[in-house]
Image (cartoon, rainbow, N blue to C red; front, side, top):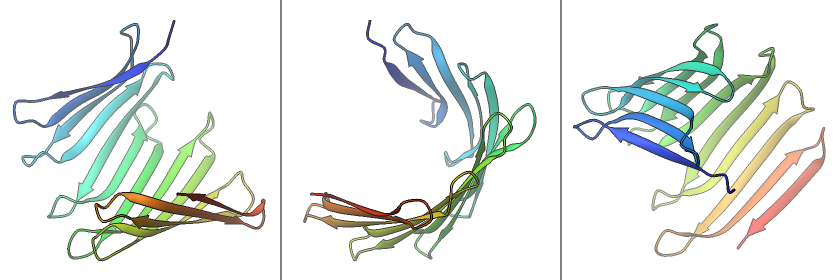
Length: 178
């Protein structure tokens, strides 16, 4: 038989997301998240469990007055240890200026990935360049990834180029999509 997973989202009477779950083709729930929203519908916190991995977690969202997420913090519900933390900065219009992410994983929670993303926007507000750094405590060096985008008049991506550099591990690579 064919295995597939579908995501099922449930909303309250105000139209705010309250649960989201991944269900396999046999109807078994693989993962479920439950959300708590503020009066404007912004998610303030979430709890979740991954049935297959037998893990449970909690997450909190710190927001500014506009409702932009300033910090997302996900912790193991049993141990309280951080799983993931992402912080964002914005300009005065609410456009993302940077995103910093730290993810901890592995059976001993000693594997740590860090990613920083900084977008540059064109006059239409579309991402023209995305500069990222990725480091991990189990890989040599740091990856420096730059993605350039070009758009058609309708705002659809018609060209992208990814350049990845990590001299310590493998030198550099480049990939274009037209």
